[in-house]
Image (cartoon, rainbow, N blue to C red; front, side, top):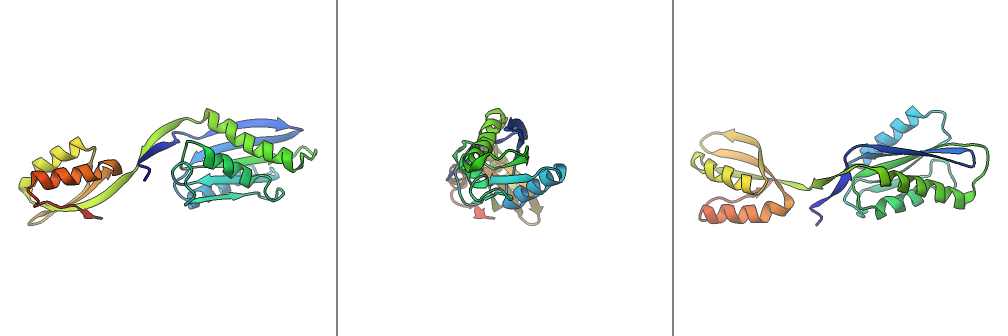
Length: 203
C-alpha cells in the first residue's frame, strides 16, 4: 500500500508551436475522475476557439490504474489521450490531470507527429510542475473515558494524529485521523498503555 507520494503543489502549464499548431498543456491536481472531467470542461470553456482539448488523468498514486482516463477529443484514435496517459502513469507524481489544448495551424502532423506533440507536452509540463508530498490518511473511532485523554493526546502527538470530532456523554467518542503508516504502531501503543482496555475501531 502506498502511504506517501508526490502530488502537484500548484498547477503548471507550458506552450509549444509545432508546424503552426499551438499546443498548450495544463496540469492540475485532482483526487477523482469527476474532478478531472470538471477540469477538462473548464479548459474547454476557457479555450472555446481551440480545435481539440485532450485529457489524461490518474486520480490515484503514481502508476496506479484504479482511477484513470483519457480522451482524444476528436484527434485520430490513439494519437493523443493514450500517449498522454502513458506519460501520466509513468510519472513519479500522482493525483493529477493533464489537458493539452490544440489550436490547429492548418498543417497535418500525422499520427506520429500528434503522439510526439501530445506526449511531449505532458512531459514538458511535468518537468516544471511544483510538487509536495501527500501522506495517505486513515480515520478510526475510539470510545474512551475522560481520564484517558492525557494518554491519547500524548500518543497522537507521537504518531502525527489528530482528533477530527468528539462527542462527550458518559464516555467520549472520538474520531481520529492518522497517517496510514502510523496506524498499526498507534493502535499497539494504545493497547499496551491501557492494558488492552482501549481498542481502535474502523470508521
